[in-house]
Length: 396
Image 1 (spheres, one colour):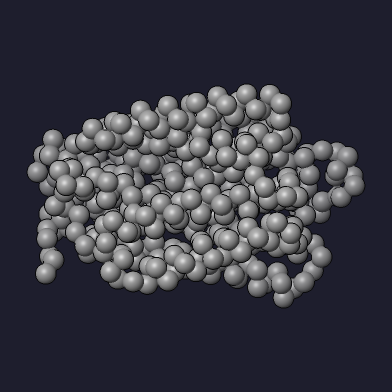
Image 2 (cartoon, rainbow, N blue to C red; image 1 turned 90 degrees about the vertical axis):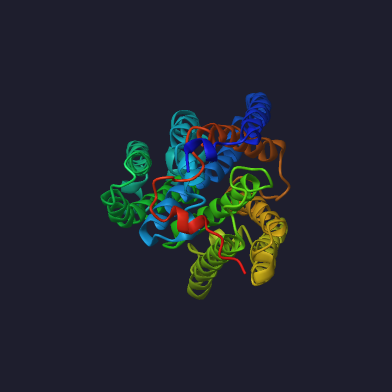
């Protein structure tokens, strides 16, 4: 097997060009709307940003999980995962508008002295929620993520160059365990800082894990769609992707949906049974009126229907149906993020133009950068000692 055998096809280049074009046009439209509604711009920008951040960090988490478990399920999606992690420098750049300009629109509840005087924070909240501490922690998160990205991409390239060096595989596995712990902790605190602090008087210890689970769902869904696209007849992975791979990937998507549902229900159950005024504010604004209708949509279309669909082994082995379920889960991730972030800024669930334009803009730019990264390396990790076994046909 050579790198030329698994070169990205022309469709990846087409995806790159189309995504960049759509994303830049949508971003220009969003910038025009921002001149009239700067607050609404940053409210929607945060939601869109958390969506694409989820693809990059979810890929980092899945990449480390694959190295830790040495599962064959991850060998076919390892290079797309690595390509997605290499979009983190773009995510750093896209965070700068929030870092420098958007905080006064997003976190006025703890930045505005008048609001603080009307609703004072506790001593612990006051020490945590300061402008300087927020920015220092944000820099720490990105440093950790970029270091993990660099480490695992570097070792993977070394594995392709030094194919007989088995120590590289052990090093990848060794660093994966601590890396997963760092990912979960930093993402949990980032979710608390960037999203939960919109309502600083409300707190949940499970909140960060909801974002981790949601990132794993959206990333696995994206990887399923990408790998099936690359395995179309005549594609570079034609003959390498088998039904057992689809079953494993679909099974993991099912498991992550269950994990997300468990965290969501646990948070609701704990807060509901406590029934304390300062704790129920999160659900009081999200379970009634038009936002309550969105909550029902999320419950049914993000959990119940995918749950019952993915129970079917035949569906998980179907290369036509499984990607459709996967793409649906990405769409529902957008709806879930809309429900998590926007009720604090709007009493009605009717989306405004920026709620629609900015997710398209950031997703388009991110997909274009992802496709550009995907073209830079062979689509399979040619130096992995388990590659031949992973792509061998065992179907009966």
